[in-house]
Image 1: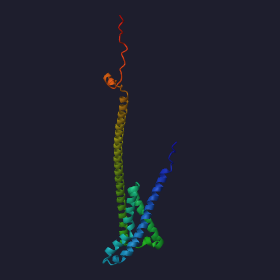
Image 2: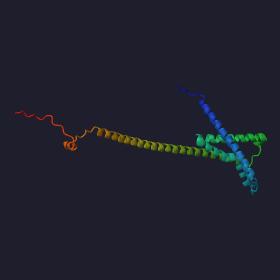
Image 3: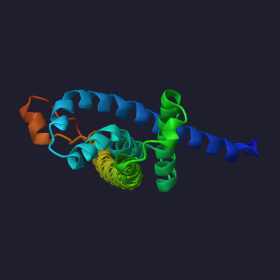
Image 4: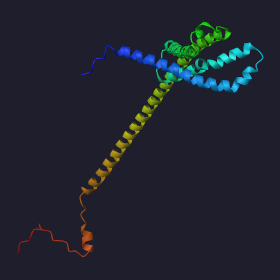
Length: 226
């Protein structure tokens, strides 16, 4: 007997999906933070040498928000190749989860001042970078799903081609086996036909030439004596 699905199964599916989205955002934040720190340490002198703030601020914001501009779309693309993800739910949810972690870190470091002060051009650029990361993530999910569907279609086509090749090979093997059975049957009938043939009788002349005396005929009539 098949067990009936539990009434809590849809809720469990949603919880697992929520956990996956949160984990995706957190992982992108961690990996992006490591990349950002590495790039900032290497490019700090070059960024500081830029002649204008209109160039330094966008570059600094791009390096700081690398997790949502580059890492999150990459992870979304890779995940969409394996798992069927919802486009906007995953993109927005993962970006929001990473953003919440960033705000939590800023609150732990600066307290409430991190929410009430510092609203400058850089803050506006960070908001634009956040929205751009969501759009890039959604596009990456679509691309990943399209690539996954294309790969599954190619795999299915290869499977059909292999099946047709196997069927042709099986038919050829069956035809070869049938011809072999016919040959073996014909070879078995030939000796049996030669064994059933009657033996030829040697002629009388050949027997006399060999020195043998032919037997007198048994039905010769006798002449009565006078």
